[in-house]
Length: 488
Ligand code: PHE
Image (cartoon, rainbow, N blue to C red):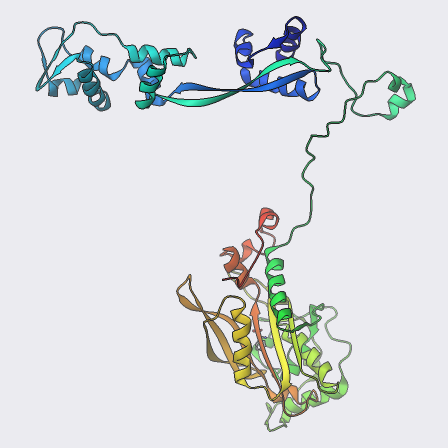
């Protein structure tokens, strides 16, 4: 065993000058000797000093010639002792590379006459290259000029060899003592702790990497969006309720009860509790009236509005439900302009594919003030998206039950070289704002977008299931880079 060999050797000798020689003298693998040296050094049985040596090893081509002979000698031997051989004939007898290199080297050495016919100029040659290669292979030293020429022919390459020279250390003993690493209950009971020799603390040992929490990419991107909203003077809305009543999710937004989004194909309704406990009755009455017969210059939807439909609990389909609650609360106060934002989860009964899940995160912003108009909306969107590095925007007329006018937002994607849809926006309708009790000249501009879309673009993820859900690779969570957006 390497350990006994090393400790035993040092009992009589001052030093092991070279671990490599030591290994070969004792028939040991150098790697094993090195491991033992490191371990003995750790316990200070020995002192070890690094040694580095440049050595030469054969390339694949070098190994081939060491076995088969150099190309020049192979070529020489293929030329007949007497007379000559045609160059074509000679070429057929040898491998193409051997022929090519052989011709040039044997010509240089003046061993053969190279013409259309090839003949020998000398009768006997020595394969010096092969001999040198074998010596290198055996770890023997060769002369500087020889090294140079073998290197030039790419038959050998330098390799750094690492080993140690070793001497006795402060704790040297010819045999390793078993040292205790722990003081156990048994040691105390038996009293043998008095005789035990304890292992020294190794203050240089590295501890295991500490486990810690990690931020999901969605959380990092969310933080960046939050920063932008806060820089723009927006306050965050409380979004801590996934369960919402149909009333706040749809009715208060002037979304009619027969609207297809209110179907169970699009929305998750709750089984228990299936209905909400309370709604603000006087406000419900005003909402019912605006749906049925309008008011505030509107004809309404002209249908029988049903309370049971409004009572149904659901998983909120958009964070606009939260915005609606906030606006309702705001309208109850003496009027003051506000900027609100939220970023949180919403749910839709969608079939899952590479870009859709049944739940995602919405980013929503709104500004409430007197006399706002479409120009203000465009201006705010321009400011908001410029901070994300998207300054080329286009707007397309769209439809939402609760906004008029409504606009889809498109941004020019430099990478994809096309316009991509990035969000939805609009001005909340008077049918939504006036029943809440806002003064008549108060307008609310608002917009929404998903958090997943920009996150996937920023982190180069093209399947949403790689970002969110039970199939996510945990190393994505542990190793994703920090997120800085809008720096360009
Ligand atoms: N609620 C809309 C959606 O779910 C987004 C939106 C918010 C649109 C505010 C207009 C105004 O897509």
